[in-house]
Length: 389
Image 1 (cartoon, rainbow, N blue to C red):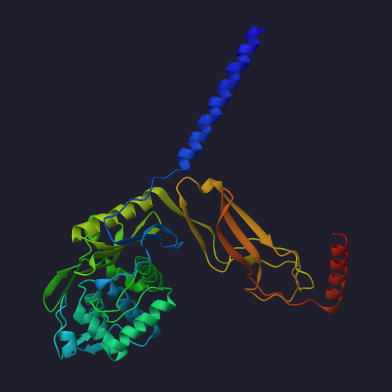
Image 2 (spheres, rainbow, N blue to C red):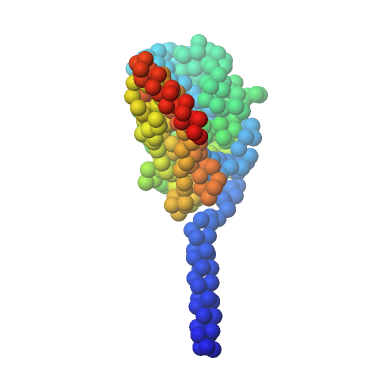
């Protein structure tokens, strides 16, 4: 009896030890270190597909954006090209104001005509203040009017803490943005006008026989980095908005107010490395995918297809994908007629009971009412179904 009792005790100890080890292994798979603290006034790390903010510090602090301003200048040029209001080959007459612009320049000359395509490269690659003023005057009539349009565009994009007073980013009272807003803008540049985005990865641009390099050092250091923009003034410090893509995952980093060109590159690398190392982006469902086909009453067909309007992307710590759960909450009774896009419930994605994402379940097709006898029969069946619970 004593031997059996000892064996039971040893077995109990072994089972407890195995349980503890399994628990520790699960915790080890889910724990991630704290985000790096950067030597910068403000910073943000965003996943481009999900829009989730992975790291932030003073993300809504209004700061001078310096030449990061030119991201919006370029975005508006890209928007005008997309609308057909201008073309890349259109010629822009260079004014005295543009020619005399201080600071970084692409060296355009007063009275000459320069194509929109070259000016866009001068803005993005060479950070040309002269090019920025030239397109502002061409599109808005004046730089002041163009700056007002820039602010309106910012609000429309959800950039709630941004105001523009010029198209260059040269110091001006009331000219400010935030790390969060600049991440939103960078994401829109990448997604809205992908045909123009390749310009942000170009390392050099030559105009007027003057070859100038892109100031984004990460384009040389990290092959996964393909944009976006640098900025610097005495007031703003050294700033950088960068984007990189690895294994289908795209991250956007914004670093504002560092001490040097090297510092803004180094601190941006820290953010990107942290995001790629410890997070992953999943796409559980795609737009138009049939997630459920519930009964529809009084319709021409017996069922209606439900799904989501847009792709659902989400960013989670690496190693936790198996712990995600999905729940469909569908309306108990759906009656015809049904219009495509009409909502009939929600889909929820949760991690350990915490809801990470929720999207409306919409009809992927329209369903007309059935004939008189179909409607009558379904109403009788539905009545008794409700009556019986």
